[in-house]
Image (cartoon, rainbow, N blue to C red):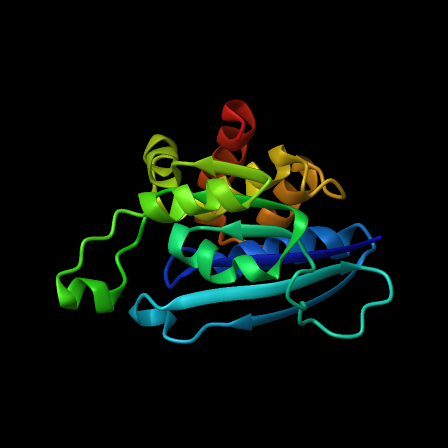
Length: 195
């Protein structure tokens, strides 16, 4: 078994933590894991993405274009940016809520994300779209977005080598104690509301 997973978003959305949770859950089940993060200008709302490979016979953490089984995107423009990595039959789980890039804000450009989601609907066979911002409000914190999206990826079947309990155990291991309950609630929310 080999799974190629790309997680993408902007700084502050918890992309790297979500990647670490998948990696920890996979390692606990005995899978080999290789990962690499490219953070860029994350502190200023710039692009953040992680390459994560799980399985046997891994020699590099980097994923070639057209070979990702799952693209987990916390922001629609970032999903479009990373789409070339998704294989034709791969799964894309994306939050429809846009994060205005600094360059667009400075230029006074209007960006709603809807045009990105429309493009993804035309281009991706296995697409799961959810309003991550609305879901995070229901859970009670914008910081829950990453685990809501991770739960949505579990619900989609794209992380079929992991269970919700595997991810819950990784949350207890990797998240500060004061945030464990919120993240467990986010995981439950994703299961209860589907993708």
